[in-house]
Structure formats: structure tokens, C-alpha cells
Amino acid sequence: MSRSAVRWTLIAVLALGAGGGAAVAIGAVTGGTSTTLGNATLKVTSAVYDPSNSRVFVQSADAPGQRSLEVPAGGGVITRWSSNLFRVQAGGGSFALNVVRPAGEGEFSVVAVDSHTVPADATTNIVTFPVRIPVSGGERLAIATDAPVWQGSDYPYTGAKVAVVTTPPASVGQTITRAYDWDGVLIAVEAVVEPDADRDQFGDVTQDVCPADASRQATPCTADAGVGLAATPTSIPLNGIGALAATVTAVSGAPAGTTLTMNLPPELELVQAIGPSGPCSGTTAVTCPVGDLAPGASANAVLVVRGVKAGAVASSASVATATTDPVAGNNTASANLTVTAVTAVTAGAAVAAPGCVVPPLKGLTRSAAGKLLRTFGCATGKVTTRKKPRSRKAARVVSFTPRAGTRRDRGAKVSLVLARPKR
Image (cartoon, rainbow, N blue to C red):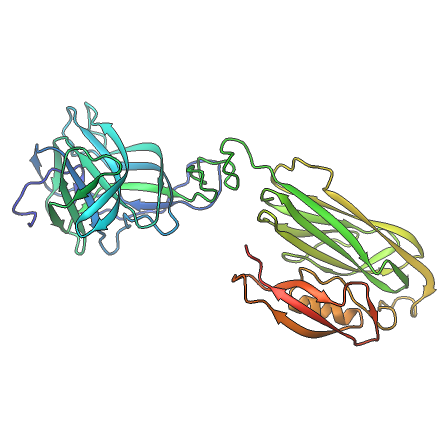
């Protein structure tokens, strides 16, 4: 049935588009990026009037160049929706946002309804309603009304299609069936879909202060980050080199904005710093960015140090996060290292003791591990890369043989097992 043959009942189904802009984040929460569906600012060029009642208008096909009304893969939460009521005749009746899921040829399952009464004075162009509607990928926006409304009649959108359903007001769980199609038309409705990482049905951009914890929405996330520090070997000669390996672990929750700082005493001098995420900075207080950690994940950093003064010395490490850490007791760690008075080589040279001393390699990339092995007089042996888990992240050392601190002849090979992080 063409639109020239029938006068339709439609809430703000408009014919000439003004185009779509970018999604607007309106809150102080910053958990991801929102997506805007549809466009409430479409313009009417001419209209007819029909007081018929109770129809649902499903945007079953989008128009090229216009924002889609289909929820993208991954879904999320609709946090507000808008429509153009400029052409709605005032004086009662209801209108509603419907979210529907295609259920077969010409059929749709209603998964959400947000209903309102048409205001007595409906002359305002755009009305916006804050909501919290969980949605899934592939679901579509629709408008339902039993109010007398205007409809656009000119300038069809090629490729666009509205499925018109004649039904009493739709309810959640109901399957509705298309009565006929309206070709070339877009419904003037838009909605902002926000991600919902913790699946708590609160939008991560404006509604959920803690997108990483489903039990929190109004208060900031808490996450326990712990740090460990070890020296390898535990004794080096004067001017000899050793390694300090720090491991940061997400003990609970998902620490965000994590940084690691390792402090060197005067008896040790920094030769090289290998951070878990980007370069480290500083020479005596060495700070390495760690970033965000998934629950249970860990990150590793290694400092190559040279002994410049004999004595038993202690180095320390500390971890800080942007999230609230409820456990302060595991935020610091220390490691002891003895610099012996026996000079390894001529003062000023930084080399390992004769032979190979296997350095700490866990958490390093293959390239970083290879360089560190050469620094400590060792060589890369057999390298095995696990196929799972599949990830786009760079593979890192998860185990190596022989273990850290083992002494071998110079050039001894160390076998590596690498895997890609899960998250």
C-alpha cells in the first residue's frame, strides 16, 4: 500500500531529514562511548491529518545516509530518547517508545515500552525522556500512539520502510504483526544507547559511576591492587648488574589508571627499565604506567641495575590506582640485594657476572625477553607460543626454563613459553 493511497496515523513520521550529529554524553561518568540511533530533528515539508487510533510504527528498514534505528552489536542501555511532537495535535492520547525484536516475516516481539501522555500543549519541537532500558544488538526502535497526529507526505527516503501495525497499545512480550508497509519514510525518533560493561542495566556513560562492578552504580569503584618485588640474583659484584622484577596484580576488582613506582637506593644505578605498558620515567624513583587491569590480571616490570657501592641494600616498589583501593597493606613491597666488594670489571662498565644468570622474564614480550637475556649473558632457546586464548594483544612470557637466578655457562639457552593475555 503506498502512502499516496492512505492517510496514516503517525507520531512525528517526517519526510525531509536534517541529518544526524554525534552522540552527546551528558553525565560526568566516562565508562565508554554512547551511540545515537535515529534522528528526532527530521523536518516535515507538508502533512495530512488522520485521527485514527492505536498503531505501532516500526522502522523496519533504514535509509542510506541516515542514522540507523537498529541497536548495534553488543547492545547496552537506552538512557534517553527523543521525538518530534511539533505536528502532534494536542489534547490527550498516549505515545510510546517501543523496542522490538524481529521475530519472523512481518512479525516483531515487543521487548520494552516507555509510554507517555501527549501534553495539552504539544507545540514544542523536541521532547526528551530520560530512561533506563536494557537493549540487545539487532533490536529496533519503534513509535506507538493512539493520539491524533500529523504525518509527512513528501520527499520519500529511498530504501526506508516503516512497518505499520494496527493493534491495541503493545505490551512487553507481545508479538505484533505488520498490517502494511509505508515506503520511503523515517520515524522522527532517536535514542542514546550507552555501553553496559558490567551488565547491571545502567548506562556506563551517564548512569553508572562504577562500570566495572555490577553491585555499584552511585559510588566509585573499589579495586585492590597488590605489588611484589624480587631481586635476581640476590648478590652482585661491584659494577656488576642484577634485576629487580615487580609484579602488579589485580587482587580484586578491576584497578584503573594503575602506576608502578620502584625506588632505588644510592648503591644501585639504573641501567635499563622495561615497563608493562609503555616507557618508564625517572632514574632513582622509576615510574612505569600499568593502565587498567582486568580482575585477576597482572603486569610485570623489570629494572636492570648496576651495583655502584658495596653493601646490603633494599629497594622498594609501590602501586597506585585511580580507583579506590580498600587494602593498603599490599600496595608496597621491598627486595634486598647485596653488592659485594669484589669488583666484576673495570669501574664504569656495567656487565653481568661471568657466565649466564637467568633474569626474570615473566610478563615480557619476546623481544624484551631476548634483549634482557643477552644483557645477562644468556641466549633465547626454544620458543613456544600457545594458541589459546585468542587475543589481539602481544604475546608475553608466561613461563621459562631454567628459572630466574639460575647460573649457566655464558650463552646458555633459555626456553620461553608465550601466550596472549585473555583481556
